[in-house]
Image (tube, rainbow, N blue to C red):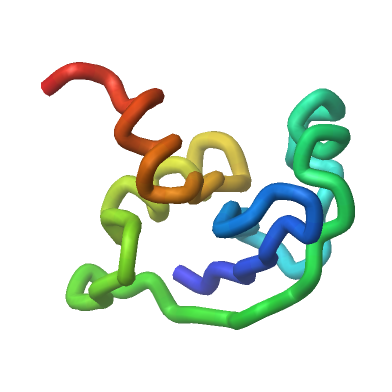
Length: 85
């Protein structure tokens, strides 16, 4: 599965993965407003073997299939909003 990665120019260390390039309509309006402008960073193949720096590739693929997007928050914020295991 291909993913297109964008960084938020308003929120530091926040990245958006999209299932289709430049398909920002998939993002809910409140999310788009909070993230501000997005800058294309990378196109990546999310195979089962793919390792991502700060995200689980399986979770990203699931979100892309169900929502069309995945948001990667900064490490400190991600741990604060992550559900308890």
